[in-house]
Image 1 (tube, rainbow, N blue to C red):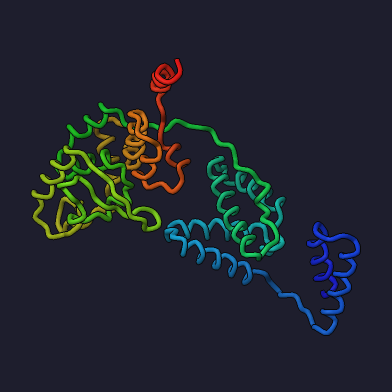
Image 2 (image 1 turned 120 degrees about the vertical axis):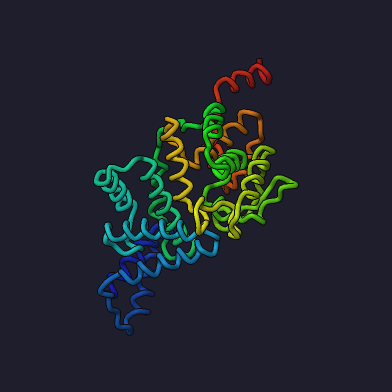
Length: 326
């Protein structure tokens, strides 16, 4: 066992030492370890779990949400169970084989595989930064190329069609606030009545990682929202509640279901809250809003994420070319 430790240590240090230094290292290790009894643990499972927990603790301090942390943990543990090696023994080929096998067995898209690669890269990079491992095995695995699909947005006609067919003033206010603020549905369900500043037409929302930011709404949203709140007879502080007693705060699932049924009745495909957010981003870009301001409005940490939301129309590219170049 001692010789195994010496051999592994020397092997790791070979890129940094010449022959004389390597021989001296072996000699020092033999001299240092001869008086110690060395035994190998029966399993690396406890060590792996400790590393994962330490990584999750670090991410939690950085402000990651519990939902994201659960996804990270499940992704990392699934890999560890599949590879069946200790964290320090996993190499680049192990990760490549795992990703290939996962894609084959699960019939996963390239986007899913790249998400897994990204999480594993974050985990092993953290281990490297903390000096638990010498080098991340994911470093040489590059980003998976994915098809650039143009995601759908709502047209002005579609938005007006939904507004005109709202049977409840609550649903009208709901559509307006999603369309004019671009907030996430998870942010919307947390809002209370007293969070709304009607004079300034703004409100503070809590986004991913409990980061707060200001969002803004238009005059039409203000009028419909005030009409909805004035019509309420309940004492629930929530901004949006169910239509019937006990007038509970609306959940993410409740809003998604309401919009989905509305779209089904009107013959509109794929009606969901996030599409309002994408529509606002695309419209803002088309009208010339600087991407940095849109990034702040949407609450994105990275500007690359904002660019993925915004679909720039080709006609606007043509107009811009004539304006700035031709």
